[in-house]
Length: 91
Image (cartoon, rainbow, N blue to C red):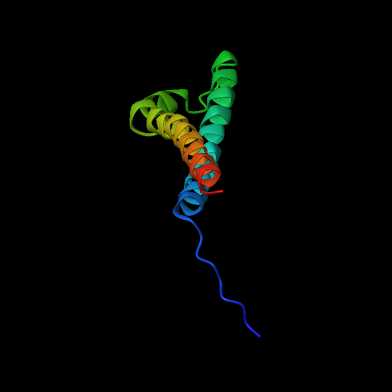
């Protein structure tokens, strides 16, 4: 006896995709932050641990990752709000 599977609402599907992208992006942001801390500590001890390379990656990689993280957090909040709003109207 198989029960039919209800399709996932578009807001839940969109929310899960945004959440997955945010998790991956958060990992990239935390990794770059850790690299920055290690490189600054290395610079203070006269060790070259890639601070100049980190600075060169700021505009093409790290700044967009931070922007995606902020925009995704806002989008996740909006999708959640819209989903709750329509679910409240439907009941």
